[in-house]
Length: 395
Image (cartoon, rainbow, N blue to C red; front, top):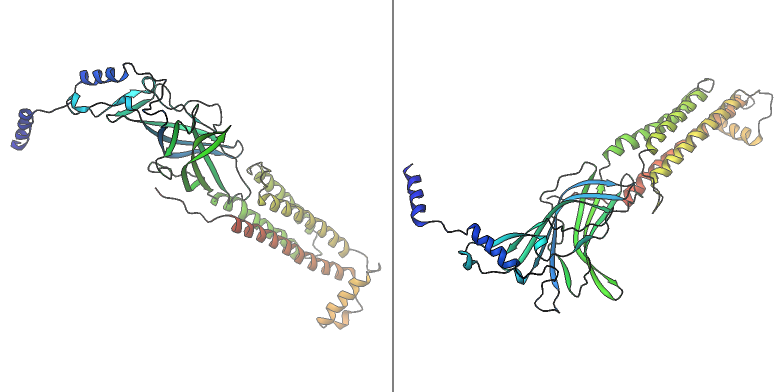
């Protein structure tokens, strides 16, 4: 306790220096008197104002492929220098190094979002407070939900990667009087929260110059590269499709004399139709730049299911056909060669339509297996080749 008392006594004897409310009020009056916020701050008319911008991303709120919209929550940091807002801290007891003023009291860049999802509104409103340093540097930190347009590319769905860009520009100014600068080459992710459907694989923060009627206009572009988390699609779409394909093949393992072959194939076809109907409600409805390979795979699987039903009906028809009807010569010759290879010489003269049905059943089962195998393999190989193995960036 004695140590505490000694420290308090020392502070009381030495005194604590600091600016007062009156001094800060006087500073505000000195800064805003005869200050015209409509005129941009420049000492030399030929020198443009340099505006440094940085973005702190908090979370990806939404990305809608159907609406071509991305919503990002974050803070935009804007800094520039105004020589009219400088003072000597020694005139205010030496401690008044910074203060705060509203945008309505000072000049601020007329910053807009170039690609908003809805209407354009000023980024810096009159009610935004900015920090003013004694050397004239003005810093405004604006936290908001930024909604912009972003064209989705589902060519590799559900292994797709999307690139979206937020574009900022200063309305009514060109590169001759206003220069935009990126404070960092990437978006700040110190406060970023991981998204459940998408993860970031890369960010960029750069300035792009455009030519408009012979004038140069600068645009700050914040680029987000995202990759879909496809675990849900793999377990709830691709794996069920794979098992449905296996079930389709089991119809050819049933005995030909069984009357359940047609019913089994029809049941599987109905299951495929119902499942594909559910999947279609989840797939993004886009035709450009190209359809998802999953759409073509589902179409091939559906057509394969229809052909299975047709082949099963035809094979069943041949199996129950009367033996006195003539068997085509090429079928008879092929069956004879098969029986000769198997050593069934006694059965060469006893070739019936049941043998033809067994032959077709063997051919069709192999053909369907090859179709399903290559359909699934091509789909997986295509997505493996076209999709980039990205790694989520850390903070």
